[in-house]
Image (tube, rainbow, N blue to C red):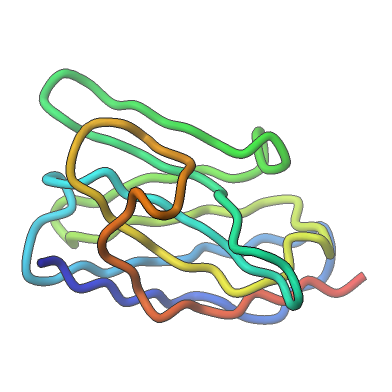
Length: 126
C-alpha cells in the first residue's frame, strides 16, 4: 500500500497560481497511476487530472474545465506528484485529493483509485 500526503493548498486570488504536492511513501509513484480529484462544498467529488509514467510512455488525462491551466507531473527523486494550477478561478475552490491506482488507465472514475490522501483545501477568491 502507498500512503499519500497532500500539501500546498491555501487562499489565492482569481488569476493566481498554486502548486499542490502529493508525497508518497511505502511504494514508489512510478508503480501507480496518480490522480487528482476535488470536492467543492455540497458537490460530489470530481476528477481533475491523472498521470501514468509507465515504461511504455507517459499518459495524461485532464478534466475539460482545467485543460490548459493545470499540469500534473512527478518527481521520482522526491517520490512526489505535483499539480500545478495556473489562472485559478473561484470555481476551482474545493478540497483537493491525491489518489493512486494500479494499472495503466488514467481513469477519471474515483472508485478506480484504491489509495487516497487526506486532502488539502484550495480557496480562490474573486
